[in-house]
Amino acid sequence: MSVKEPPSALPHTHSAASDEPAVFGADASMQQGAQGHSLKILAILSMLMAFASISTDLYLPALPVMGTALHASMGAVELTISGYLIGFSVGQLFWGPIGDRYGRRLPVAIGLVLFIAGSAGCAVSTSAAMMIGWRALQAVGACASVVLARAMVRDLYVGHRAAQMMSTLMTVMAIAPLVGPSLGGQILHVASWQAIFWTLVGVGLATLAALYALPETLPPQRRSHEPLTRALGRYGELLRHRRLLGYAGAGGFFYGGMYAYIAGTPFAYITYHHVSPQFYGLLFGAGIVGIMITNLLNSRLVRRLGSDRLMRVGTLGAALAGMLLAVDARTDWGGLAGLVIPLFLFISATGFIVANSIAGALGLFPERAGAVSALIGAIQYGTGILGSALVGIFTDGTPWPMGCVIALAGVGSLLCARFLVQADTRMPNEALSSH
Image (cartoon, rainbow, N blue to C red; front, side):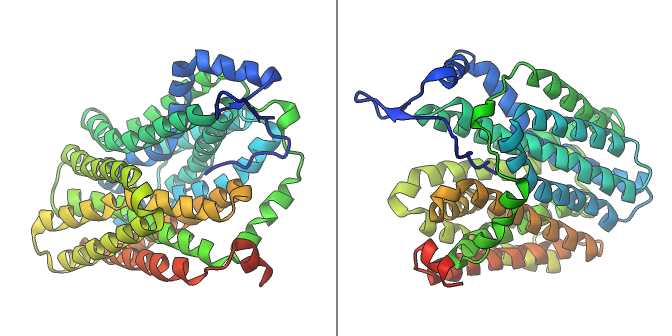
């Protein structure tokens, strides 16, 4: 999510020779320093941004083994993903205003400490209930790094340089899930499932140490003095806008399907179809490659075709792939390939749905982009909680619950994109004033 800029934001002006905003004073010195150490800053911010995916993707191949070790059912172990999503969904609504009020480094450092504690707790857990609780704490800490890393980019860079840095960080977020399951599978091959969480403890400690090389990017004079309760209360206003709910629903339903995929594929592939944990990592990585391809296509086509049209195309593809998956999961038609192919098509739709739904929502309220981004992020991960939880609740030893949830998610995303987004043509302020 993005963090809303405080009212006393960095002063900008425009020079005659350039479209880039000029920055003066201490902030200019800070940004010049950032330009001179861009590789170091990029590395640190990349580590912070990667926490969202590595915290879950690294341990996915170990889910079946964990279930046996903890004497827990498949459904109970899958709920560890839901516990993580609860912490991540709720936590990000708080870290943004906290970062605006108290600066970036201190909240990120606190978040990293929570992440380290949560990861260690997961490693020593002796029951599924303990694991779920520690995963929630781990997520609350992890989301601070993700949320505030994006705010740091805006603090340190302006104009096209900020866009370049953010694009690079988005690429890192796409690469992290690609290597996460494969690396987790290799750790599991040579050590126990607990070693995966001790590895996350090490990653957290290394990132915390690296944080000291990153300067505080939000000086006191630029921090917001608005009470946190007031900042949180403004989310209710946004929820009354129908078109915004359409964008949020298109991305939110899709996230529900994505996390049903994350929760369901370890058992569908490893337990049901007897795929090795290492090969599971490769199958999972294929979906990430699909996401990267469609993100590239989206960036090249969006100017010509429009983001709403591409979003609708993506939701249509997701709905069709989801329905095909449900049929294959119910009838076992096609065996493993009958799951892999429609799942690949569904996950690949990410590049057309997620970015365009977020961009559409932010375009409705550009002056409140931080609040909109926070709300969209919470809704997306909230539906992720529901999607992964439903797979766990209705688990029956077959891929059918996963396929059914993903199909419903794809259809829900399509309905939101086609009807709610098109239904309200009024200006945002007019829509809000009518409620």
